[in-house]
Image: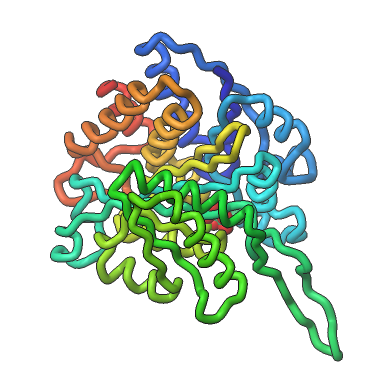
Length: 356
Ligand code: IPM
Ligand code: MG
């Protein structure tokens, strides 16, 4: 089993190094052998090759069974030509691998209740939702796009565009995911204003005919943003387009109080999936052994579960080891609390490894 590993920038290298220790250990424990190959993406790729997504990286990713990513970007590349920003590397590999479905689970670890930003009576109802974000369409990739001069002033524009087949395939992912959970799917759009959203809603309703066992609801994106903080317990699976999903998944993750805890999976039909923590490259704490490695370690669990048919058990073992580390009171700075055992990135991974 061949895994392409892209540490990327900032804290990416430290957290991925710890996640790979966990992968090794779980491989040894369950008798599986993982080959890993490292590839460049983002700022480090710009420094080494002049662009954020070298061809060699695309080749290595396509040849792998799965891809593990740390994070990309940092202040060093903030003033660079927008066409080759580090983020372009991430968008590029999503497109190259056809990773149209981004699964972002946001659930509250009972051990981390204190870190939650919401009122205790709201938290008491629980948070366990999954954002299914469309990842290769919409305003992120639509054309025409650009900035040009019209009538003597600059005009900027992007195009939020979806074809039926793109909506249908992500809707199916949403329904399938809901089927395996609490059987509630909320499709988020802006159908009261946007034409593209009207089509989105029509197609989602068409797809729902094949899923009579799943309760489908629709919500406008502005209301969804409000409901997420008012009562997140009402959500099971949310399916939405790329830009809305980008925004709502940040909101959904941060209300759990622990963006440093949450993994994600980006999947496409027939290609290796890409697994990464939801958080970014955190340049302010990079290289200081302060980063929380748990989101990346949990991304390895998702990688095993979604990329291989026979790895539910190792995946569950990783998740259990993470939970035990939290139960034993170990915390990195982002989730610290009174009386906890404050540890760094390496030490947190040590505790997870010990529990494995
Ligand atoms: C994310 C990030 C990316 C996105 C950026 C880094 C391009 O915010 O994965 O949510 O906007 O998709
Ligand atoms: Mg984002």
